[in-house]
Structures are given as structure tokens and as C-alpha cells.
Length: 408
Image (cartoon, rainbow, N blue to C red):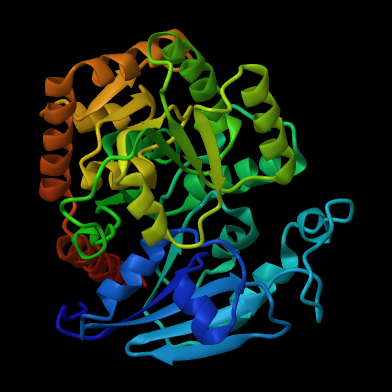
């Protein structure tokens, strides 16, 4: 049995990007930040003396492996894209996709073989370009920490990349022995694939907003949408809802924050012009850092995310911490947030008229707006404890390592 006082060595197979990595190492330079929960978890791990963490992650702008050590965290970055070139595979020649991401898998497995580690944690089964590698790891105990489920996506299922992601995700969910999950909805989906697996519940840590958001920040506009800007996240539904809201509130304002393709941005701009909403909707687009996104979001009265299939997105968690009244579709684990107190105004998926009415109701009713805000902050304070989340995660590692040792 592994002594819980022993320092354990853990490898995370994941992907992420943040400003610190870009500035310090020049990796993924100029790319947007993503997967902020990884960055926050790393910072929490650095506070501990009972774990050594190896992060195995893909990176652009490098042509060979790069490794760095910062405190008790060892970064192992490997290149993705065309070998020996700082270029990604072009859309018309997706060699990586056609070969089942064989190069990425080879790079990841090669790194793991050189490391002296106790357990592997795959973070994100839905990202096939790195997650597929976990099925090749046979000599170490493993846990798969779920971020979301690409298999629940209702859009773009005809593309080869999405089909591949769904296939890889299903294989992992059916065969993995240990899972980390955050909500009952998530656990029920995992059970439908793999009823004999072991399940460990822990939340991802969240941003310490008290360090970046002033208490007296002023509200400067009505609605914020901050997420990846896609049809699946409900941005088109929200734009049509604003068209309805405008009939009652002509000066309604919405800021759209997030990244997407230039083609889709142009499509949304045309839609906004056709609906004569140019004075009401501003497409802010990509903002470099999460901190700056949250500073802007805090200036809104309402956060709206009519996503079609999220479990409980970072947008929802961050809106709760900001104390923003939230309007969202009744999907995934979002309804679980309201089990004790109403924090989210829930709307049936795809019901644009109901979506507009939920927004109007909050704009009209100051008491409701205040109640939702207070409940959101109370929920976040009760459920988002970073130190506790990391403690539960590390306890799960010890349990899995011990169980693995017993059957060897």
C-alpha cells in the first residue's frame, strides 16, 4: 500500500495555453489562452510538497520536444503539426487525422517511457489528438478526468475530425478503469458506457476572482456572452433573442467575447446587420487572457449561455463566482446548480422566445436580479474550494495506485 505521506509522481496528458507559458518559454506564442482550469490546478499543485507533476502537452511554434521545471512541476511539451516545421497540417492534407494521430501518440508514449511516474491522468477524453495515446499505456495505473463529451454534440457530426473524436472518446469511456467527474449528470453518462469502472468526484479549481475584480466595479452594459463562439454554444439563438428583447428594451446591449473562425464571425456580423442590431450587439471577439475576459464580464448585468450540450462550462462557473444572474438552457448538469437555491434562470433548449423572456424578466425585476446574484455567489463560495478540490484529486491518485498494486 502506498503511504499517503509519500511523494507521488503524476503525469497529466492534457492541452492548455496561458500567457505565462507564452512569455516565459515562447511556446504557443500568439495563441489564445484555453483550458484555464489546467493553469489553476498547476498553481495549486505548486503549493504542495507531496506531489511531483509532469505535464505532457502539445505545443505549436516548436520543432522538437521542450522541457522545463518550475518548482515541483515538470513541463514536457511536444510539437504538433508538420515535422521539423512550425506549421500545422493544412485542412486539405490532414495527415495527422488520416493516420489516427500516430505521430502525437508516438511522442507522448516516448516521453512517458522516460519518466519515473506512479500514475497517468488523462484530462479530456474528447480531444482525440492527444487522448488516443492513453489506450497505448498498459504498464501504469490511469485515471481519465472528464472535461466534456464530444459525443453529445448536435452539430458538425458529419466532419471526419468530429467523427474521429467521438469514436476515440467512446473507446476510452468504454475501457478506462477509473474516472474523475464533477456532476451527477456526468457520472450517469459514464455509467452508461462503463458500469464497472471506479468513480472519483472532484471539481476543477477556479480563478481567484477577489484578486482581479474590484468590489465596486460598475455595470456598463446588459448582457455578456463569453465562450467559444459557435452555433453549439447558442450564440445564434442569443442574437435572435436580443432581436425580441429589443422590442421592449430598445437600448439593450450585448457583448460577445470568444474565439471562432473568421468565416463564422463574418456570418454573425451579417446576421446582426440583417436584424438591425448593430447598435445593440458588439462582437468583441478574442481577448488574450482569462483575467481580462472576467474583468469585462464583471461589468455586465446578466450572463447568458444558451449552450446546447455543455456539462457545466467554465462560463457558468465563472459567472457564479462573479455573482452574475445567469440565463442558460436546461441541459447537461446546469440544472443541478439550482438544487438548493435558484442561481440560474433555466430555459428549454432551443426555445428562443423563452430565452428572450427570461432575459426580460431579470431586466425588469431588480429584486430577482439581486437574488440570483446573491445565490450565485453563495453557491460558488460553498462549492468552489480549490484546496479541497486538489486534495480530493490527490486522494484519488493514492487510491488508484494502491488498487493497481493489489492486482499486480
